[in-house]
Image 1 (tube, rainbow, N blue to C red):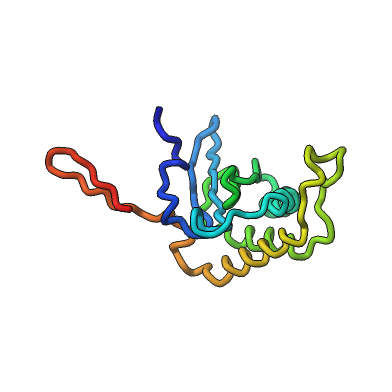
Image 2 (cartoon, helix red, strand yellow):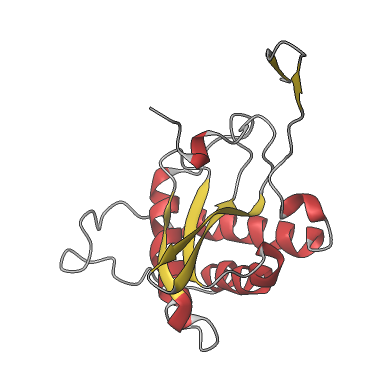
Length: 174
């Protein structure tokens, strides 16, 4: 079986940022999946589970209520590795074009007094939330994005050069 695109990215080189993971065509509509990487994989600790759950609830609510972007939002959810989130939007904006949206979304966590939908009626694991830690991660990431908004490295997956010999053998950098 072929590796899916997100497993084909060299995770030893990814830094926190916003990356285009894939662009798909559904009918006549372009749909873009963004890799919103909050921590550096395999280097920094993963986001604490309860905080990740709170970030998911608060930011999903923010995105689906943002007057400029709400009609383009298809999905916001955590990566299984707990180092970031996937954001799926209608259309195909460059990662830099959604940076301000994500800064605002993460800043909304800092200002939250409660986690929306954190009740047994609205959530399948309503006790698994940590608003205090979610605020810490949100501030850290929003500050990072704001400080690095002009750094192209936070918007492009790291490139890996692949040396191919004359007889077709491939060497992969580490």
